[in-house]
Image 1 (cartoon, rainbow, N blue to C red):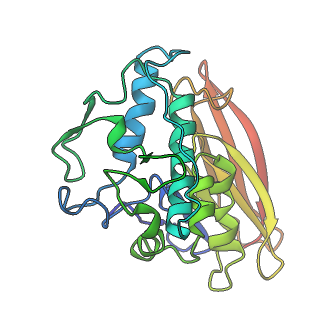
Image 2: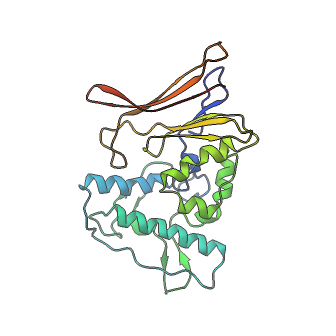
Image 3: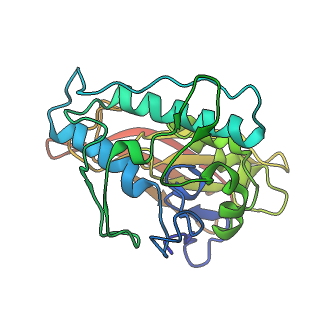
Length: 272
């Protein structure tokens, strides 16, 4: 189901994966919307459509609609608090990626992940009938309550708290940090080099694992020509295995490619 972690043959201490299973909005979801989808109803199938529409419309500075304000449910429980956090992320998304369509327009064509209908932004945007009252949502109802179960399904080794996952879903450094959480600081893991993608933001970071050993995390950035999140594009990672000499190191290099020129962005090494 697209969750594979790749380790090159003979190098179990290197882990390469896309990284989306740690993201609340992008991780596979076999739980939500099973009455209509009956498959992996990943929220990204709808979330990404909004961002893609924003780009295709020329990145307008003014949207056609305004996100209705809602207030925390003072009489609610943890589920209501988390749904309010979920609304805040949609509020941020729709104010960052403004679209030239009203939120009640049926503009999200699916035929993916088991969906067959056409939906509006309002179908995924949490709402409130009265200020401070019950917060509800049409699609992905209860998604804030199933995150721990989703992580178990997606084989996430170290569970990420729901509030943290929702609030950090649009922050690239939050997902980058999962390299430490899931691998380096996980006593069940002996991985010391991790490569993620997903965020489109190239980065290399060095830290220590749970045994105090040097570890390297690198994000492979993006291969698209124009990336608004970073000044570079066409990024890629090269890992060169160490030799048999005791002084030899495994080298990790992050590059970008532009105008037929390959340029080194970051380099580090360690002995596995």
